[in-house]
Image (cartoon, rainbow, N blue to C red; front, side, top):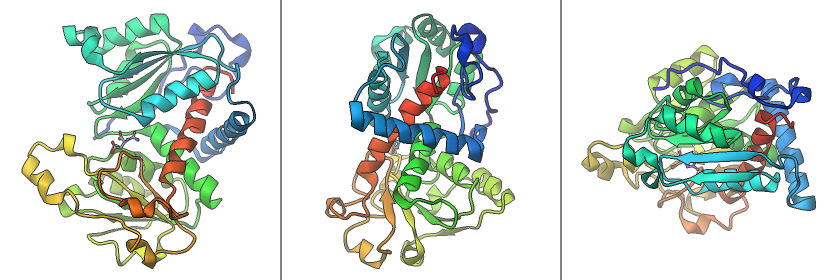
Length: 330
Ligand code: NCD
């Protein structure tokens, strides 16, 4: 599991905008949700909300004109990669896309450190997705420019958790007092690791629903325990669905299994259908980081409680906010 520490350095001496040094995230890495306080979240969500208004009013604007993002992805991605690209371009900046490291010098054996050192010569910020826990923290040790963790193996996915929480705030207008049920692959799913940690800043109740072999890691349960968060684990959804305000569904992470027979035993363990939701509250939301591979059937899509497509759009605004913040413009 993730053992890395919150960012220790402020990279601002290497960036030219002296007048923005007071901005709280200027020059900082985004490596783990552990680095955020509740007031940081209020700030980020305020900026993200403004971004959504700007996008609906003018679409694209020049806040980051002339800035360059390197999108470095060692693992597949559709939403994270393209939403960071869209975020940068909607802010007037541009993107170096390295979505297929097979075609970069990584395939010649170049180390992560050297790849990052290279890209920061050309870019102002680096978004990194990598299969190893702690890879972003490692990259940040070598980089002078901000590194944004876009998923480090089974570790964390902090920008996803921020957009997940922003979705909850925008959709339900509150976090305190909610019951959040995390369902599916809680062992390998990095999004639920980050989201559970972020939720622990609030007064929430968390339910875990998973097959026994895919339980939430003990380390995270212990962290939340220490913060006094009520948590309970179940094998089935029935018991907790009627009290659930946020049902957060995840994909079983096939690529993380060493033994594919084990995967076969747990795939399809849970399927949310329109019928499942008959037992749910009228005012609740169903979320999923996506991609879904059968955990939510398509007959749920038309239900107003299905928030997973809106969730993707909220992700654009949160990533616009984060880019503007680390580049000293918010
Ligand atoms: C998630 C991821 O990559 O961890 N996807 C995403 O970023 N939206 C979830 C997943 O792949 O299941």
